[in-house]
Length: 296
Image (cartoon, rainbow, N blue to C red; front, side, top):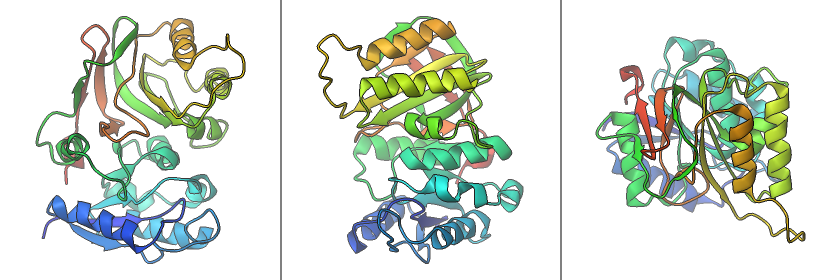
């Protein structure tokens, strides 16, 4: 078979064997070979095993010469408990694609902070993969097609064209990383943002946290995905997340394109964080330049 893809649960626990079987099926559908991490079915409350077990699995996947890519099986919570203990020294010598989103944002940011290679913000391995998502991932990981591109449903929040590297991910995780060694570095970046189950006032607080911590200093553009399952606000005149994003773009003075297919949704782009990109608001497009070195 082709590339060997490690399936790692470094955050929340899986529902059971069916999650791993679906993940393995996805890997095989691409012509690759799935390799289960030792503790992929571990469980300790809201975590997929102890910190030591999850860290050991993640470290093995990042380091092992026989592993060609690392695909996180789910998000949830737990990556921030172990990410500071991950050594990226060997990974830096032989980078490989790291795939996932949501809680995996902490790992994306750690790689960006210390190694600076491309990682892939995309569906976790246990998810159902609609045709669009499956094709996007294949394009990103093999260069067989365009990555991201034009999205006609995108909303032009603040016009302009931005050029820079892609950075960011899940807003709650980006906020949690403020003040740590793995904090978002928005300097020269088109910052990607998405989240789920967050009230508008909480999104407001997290956006302000990023801004006031300096994480968005030098940001050149905003590529905003979906904020899904937003709880209703008891205040009838409460600001919406769309309004909060528009305010942020105005304060930063940068182009902003929103409603992109990024986040906790079925049809989503695979976003190569760390890659150079062009955000063209009027064209409603995000054009990505992928380095050959990260192709499976």
